[in-house]
Length: 233
Image 1: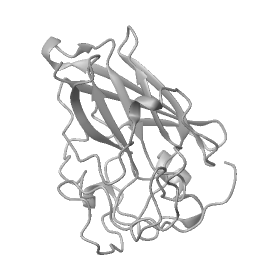
Image 2 (image 1 turned 30 degrees about the horizontal axis):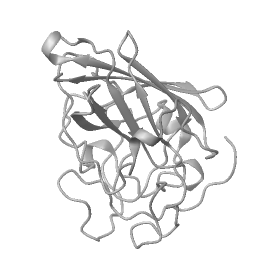
Image 3 (image 1 turned 45 degrees about the vertical axis):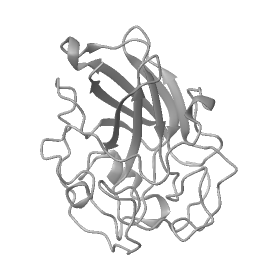
Image 4 (image 1 turned 90 degrees about the vertical axis):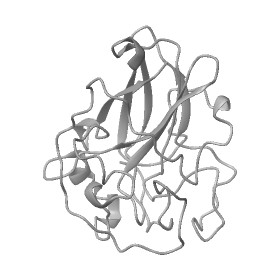
């Protein structure tokens, strides 16, 4: 890990059915599911893009999306499958991802009550890749931080080759003793006030863990996240 981390400033963003109600959450829930059931032939739930979607995603075709942000290195590997073809891997799909930095801030936004730090002029932790012959895209990034009212998460938007939206969803992280989330431990701010998956506005209805990625690794070597995202193509 490189650099220091300060207190998050985003207030209850990225809700399932609305953007924000302007209220602040003190955090809730308990460390729950540690095992991902992701990878079965089921469609990922459709979720909100949140209040911080990438403004011009086609402009950020790149694998390394770090853009100088400090934190523990993480490699994200997302495989896209086609539900209309028994979840066989889908080649040529466009996959956008974005997430907050170690402090809980998003690029392309800020200077408001929702995020006081102004990052409107930068584009860190956002990128696009096209799935290869194995339906795979790979991104180099950092382990996301967290902010008030949300569990740690990554946003994903999948399009077909023609640019038609196929699915918008969010990826959750395993929780509990020994998991990557416990190792990172909220970076320097710790986990006080953290909202766990079972109390998260987006993930609380995922009772089987289909939105939870598999995450392995260590603080010294970095982390590897794998996730299977099935869409109707």
